[in-house]
Every structure is written in structure tokens, then in C-alpha cells.
Image (tube, rainbow, N blue to C red; front, side):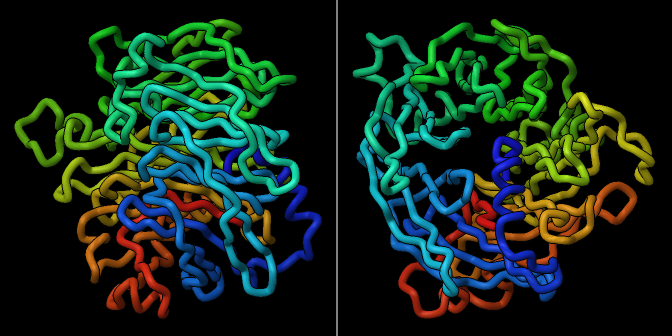
Length: 440
């Protein structure tokens, strides 16, 4: 869950019958880089288990998913050709089901999709282009496209690569300030963050400036994903190539660097200057980031969680939990038992492949520990994606500082059973996961 959905999430929880954390089940929807379907799962905190509910024939591979405020409409990107986006209805009946609403064509394969409040427009970005679509008020699916955003000169669009290959060097995301006055899109190849003004009445974006890497034009940082603090004053950016998370102060027409942190433990980051290739910083790829969602007990995000992937199956990825002050600035790790470090670190079970994406569910929204978080982690490592692989989707538990480390509490498919077995008799098995989101 994203902090942009905070108030809607709280309203949704409060308007539904309260179910104690010990008996609740939380639903999850996952895509895959290698399977065409979507996969609906349920997590039981009391049983510490993930179970399969539905395999949804779809138009994948789906690399990214986004939800509206009520989380009953899902919007997905796809690697399918010709390029397209799809929308889905989550039927919250006694037996949850997901059904297709519609699919719309776009110019280039998209890597990212978001639906900012008031959830009336859908923004996507990937490679040379981005799109703005209206939400169909009758179905909640895609309505007409009202704008195409260019990340290449218009004269080059006709010859630009529009397949998923362009995601390696083109635009890779788009996010909005809470006021919806500004939007930001990271572009890997140019190592810039593109800044836009946003017309709240029309939904149209207007380019303001290109913000270069604070480490210079030759840094080759590869900015991949950005998130914005709910105070609207701080932007965080994960860099794929240099494995950093940068915090910027948001100004009306620019960004100013506040501080940077490594996505890797100090020992691993320092080894980039050694002869050990297996632990070198260059054998990791910065990936995703999320702020802990606001809750009544913690109205201001207190941590920023990031991931990085191993560039080969020999290098396991890392998840990092960075402490923040009330202004959204990085602070030192509180009361660390590990000695000095900038974050609490968790080495992921595998490299993560193209995944190691995360989503966060606060335990306190459903009566659990006020500091506790359930963290979804997806895995696309070759071993995970094999016919006998396990753990495409994992649930991690973190209960706060000095309350134990991050640990895996559930995974699906389960170890020792194929994904076909775990998916019962439905047609397609999951072969590694790309991005998974909490639905409730």
C-alpha cells in the first residue's frame, strides 16, 4: 500500500466490519515476468500461510500493478505486444474473484502505472512514452487517452524502440506530490528525473525541467523509481546502477539533494573497490522503494524500505529499512545491536531475478502491533521460476526497531510442492513473480 492511498485505506478499513488480526485473511494479487496470468492469493497471519484462490487468464507478462482507492479496481502494465494496459475488477464476495474489464492500446511498453487521488485518471510510463487515461465512471476501467508524454524528441519517436527493451534506458515510473501540483518521472538512460506541473482540473502534465544526477553527468546512476513523502516536501529516488537512495527537497521548479544512502550494507558497498566480483556493488541492481503507510498510531511514515537485486543468481539481493524523522529526513539507526549502520538489512533468499518488488501492509490497520509491518516480496530468480521452484511470493514480518529482525513467515508456491499443485487444477502455474499488491 502506498502513502498516496492513506486516507482511502483508513476509510475503507473503518467502513468494513472489524476483524481481529488473529483471524483475518488478507488478499494479494500478483503478476509474473514469465507467466501470462495473474494470481489471487490469501495470507493468513494466524496460520502464517499463503494459499492460492484463483489463476486469472490475462494479457501478461505483467510487470507492475496499481489499485484505486477502494482497491476493487486493478490496473496492469504488460510486456505483451502490441503494447497495452489492462484493467480488472476485484469481486469482494464470499469467494473473491478477479475479472477482466478492458484492455487499451498504448504507444510503447509501459513499466509503471499509478492512480492518484481522486482516482479519476490513470498515469503510466515506460521507455520513450507515458500516457494519461481517464477512468470510465461506469466500469472503473480505462476510458479515453487524454495525453501522451514524450521522453524522447518528437522527431525520434517513430524510430524509437517501443518494446520492453526500452525500459532498460527509458522512463521507468511516475509519481505525484500529495497536492497533485507536481509529478516526477525517473529516466534510467539519461540519469535524470523529469519534473512536470500537473493541472488538477484537466489531468494534463507540462514539463518543467530535467533534474540531473547530483553526482554529475557521467555518474550513470540509472534512476529507477521515486516516491514522495506525504508532506510533499521530500522525494526519494532509487538508482539502479549506483545502488543508492537519494532524498531531495522539492522546490517549485527543481529538486535539491538532501542526502544519499547506500542500498547495500557497508561491507558490501565497500567491496566495490576490492577484487571480489561476487560482492561488488556492480553486481547489484537498485530496484524499488516504499514509505511505510500512515496509520492512526503512526500518522507520519517512520521508515523507508528499499530493495536491490543481485545481477546474477550467485548474488542474493538486499532489503533495507531506513529510519526517518518526522520531516522525512534520514536519521541514524535507533538503538542498533548491529553496530553503526544506516539501515536494518535483510538479505533476500535469492537474487530476486527481475523482481524483489515490495508492498507494505501495517498490522495496526487490522488490530495488530502498532509498529508491525507485513511486507510482500516477489521473486523472479531462475530457481524460483523453475517448475519445482518455491517462494515466488513471500510475506515478510517486521515488528519495529529492537523487536526482532525481518523474517520470512510464508511463501507461495510452498517448498516441496510445484506451483501446479499449489494452484490446484487451474491451467497456468506461476513461474516466478514480478509485482504483488495487498488488496485488503
